[in-house]
Image (cartoon, rainbow over all chains, first blue to last red; front, top):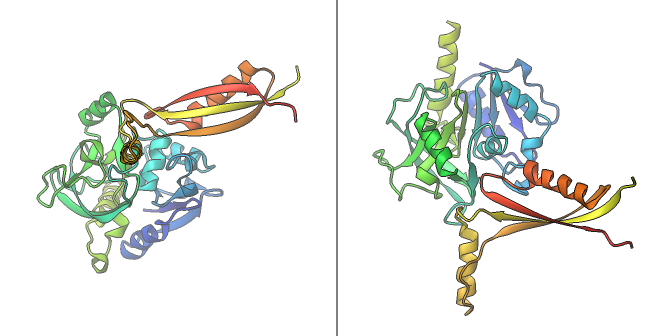
Length: 233
Length: 88
């Protein structure tokens, strides 16, 4: 499975994504500069974390109009896998590929820490290898990860099983205390209606080797790779 | 028609239903200074100079900018005030 990892000015997790996808999971991958990227030869697209365009105006708001985004939107429209992590999630929300918005953390602090996530929701190639109710340990690193959407949008999102990851405690209980940023209903990751687009604030690429403290992040990449193999088999 | 430069003042505000931790924190600081505030909401302000054939068309153009980029309709509202740029 061939991965395109996009780099905008201010992206910082592109190398980490490359390291895990290419060196740990041994998938072909390229880091592509947003101005001249050609996504046509790629199976999956990754929008990594960082501070694209210095987070000016709103997080992700400027990158959303970068030249490559027309191709990203087209890639998603054709049902191909697309993931936005942290700043990438913010970009996907600004682009309207996912509902809602990510606001300043309610603590007003930048939070860099391990979190627990409970798998919920509908089928998605990004998480079909993770059983409902399973708990993953994956770190966050953001100042603006406070997910928000209007109540009717949230209800529609929940009804279609669009919430894939929710902040929880080690035992999988969704509590106020386990919510690191004030996200409404503890939402940490969501998918689009078709399930091929996943946005999440926690960084799976930072939980890809035991030496960095855990490997739970690989479950997400492995889900996608296994699903692709099953389709081609 | 010739186009003229107009100055648009753009005010971006959070919708009343959206929590504003920055505004709340600032309000707390003002309270500490002894001011009796009942509400502080944070927002953004832009001055945009555009060329247009009339103030109405400038208004339309800047409101479109708000919809497409300057504001996020999920959480924000905008107000636009247009005036001619005074001749230098």
